[in-house]
Image 1 (cartoon, rainbow, N blue to C red):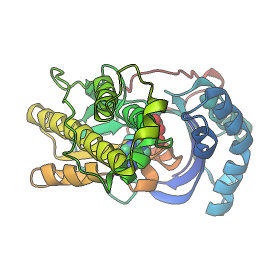
Image 2: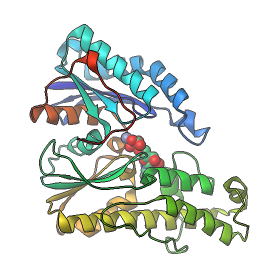
Image 3: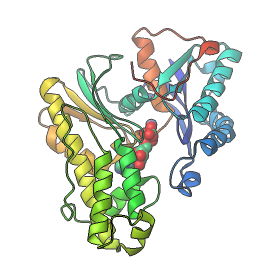
Amino acid sequence: MKILGIESSCDETAAAIVEDGAKILSNVVVSQIDIHAEYGGVIPEIAARSHIEAINPVLHKAFADANLTIDDIDAIAVTHTPGLVGSLLAGTLAARTLAVLHDKPFYPTHHLKSHIYANWLSGYQPEFPLLAAVISGGHTQIIYMERHDHFEIIGTTRDDAIGECFDKVAKILGLPYPGGPAIANAAKNGNPTKYHLPIPKVDGLDFSFSGIKTAVLRAVQKELNLPITTPSYELQKHLSEQQIADFAASFQATAVDILIKKLKKAAETHPAKSVLLAGGVSANQLLREELKKHFEKTHKVYFPEPKFSTDNGAMVASAAYFSIQSGEKASDPYQLDISPRSVIR
Ligand code: KG4
Ligand code: ZN
């Protein structure tokens, strides 16, 4: 079964054709990162306009790379939630138009579900039950899956998402957007134990990341001996390269530690055979190494190939394929509901 997957929920315009949920026939991603980097974050209005410009060339290339035409496609899947409304509208309109004109079965797909299924794109078949850490710019959740299409959220963030925290800490340190890769890069030359950042005390399997961002800000102000009213754009001018590296390394180590501790706690109450990472932050190398170190003896450990960690169309096609296998029926493209926020179901 060949599925066209379309993704446009944030700042990547992407389309891919995937066979049977795992075999990639094409995968095209156009990132707007350079455009948004200028502003230090995603500007929704600009993102929507950029998707509209990019979507048709991206679709064209996805078909050309796979050497297929729309006639060869068995179904169309598209991210319809969660995400930026203007961005979602661009991708879903393209998908609906194709589905209506060519009479193709149409599958609206949840973005976080797609991130999880990025783990099926490298030929692996993670065994159930499993624990998935969905860690992206907008979400931080631990999801327990007993089988395909069973998603139980057992932990979630009470404030900022972990990726958002990487992005905000990067901003404090004067590093570019997106903050995740910039922090990981700066941290290579830093000492992860140089600055002590408190681990937030949150009951159960929930997270809180907003306090760490403030803790980094206070630690920078203290290190530079500047008053707590000093804005971050002022602080950056005084930070040496080594101080930036040490703050980046200390923050990264703390964020990874928080996540690993919660995953270990989750594994105590939710017996699982596999543990997997999903979402943009799963590209983090330290996190991958620590996950392996802590879980390799007891679980099978999975993470997506780096190119499938961040937003792409292949994971959308894969998620839709496994939903179809589990009995999901095609939707009416005229009745599509898009929403900026929603819980995985
Ligand atoms: O999944 P994604 O592409 O978009 C959302 O659905 O949000 O995730 C983007 C997030 C950003 O916050 C970015 O800083 C983070 O993923 N990220 C990373 C790394 N690469 C991307 N965070 C930590 N380490 C990385 N190597
Ligand atoms: Zn995403």
